[in-house]
Image (tube, one colour):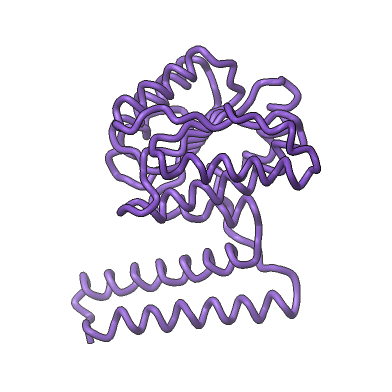
Length: 243
């Protein structure tokens, strides 16, 4: 039974993806569960435009092509979901990256956003800043940005460990509202005491679905929710000795 369980979960996930795809063609795209860490971002973009102060996005120090690839891609897709609105408001965010592989991808997001508006000449290469590849140096550099730049809000989404506390502490000291979605338990433990909206565990990967609301992201989130319920159910069955 244990050997076929992974295959069974894969089949169920594919079935959920197919079901949501068919349902989306027959009617409106299904809604997703609320996630406070992401739900407030559209409003924060508007407030950022009103104040003239950008939002600082911290994308972590995970590399594309390493063990944290999925986390970095989720962070980039969430950033892409807000890029058009930020460009339209005229207050693109500051994006701090900690790995060279993320730098050109983040730059391309905003270059394409300005191109879609027909004003590629307004693209500012300093929108995306490479801080440093060493995690502690990266966190200290982002904290320095928060202390000296006029940021309206802070969004941390990506791969970080205990050094995330340096960043959130700096934002908290300035009274800057912040949202945090990290992939590691040490990072979540370090930032838990901070006054921030948290996305716990795999909720990080739900960012694109909540922000961009594209059908492919929503289908993926629905499959994720079903699999999470099944895994919890199987764990309870095992603990109770029923399986």
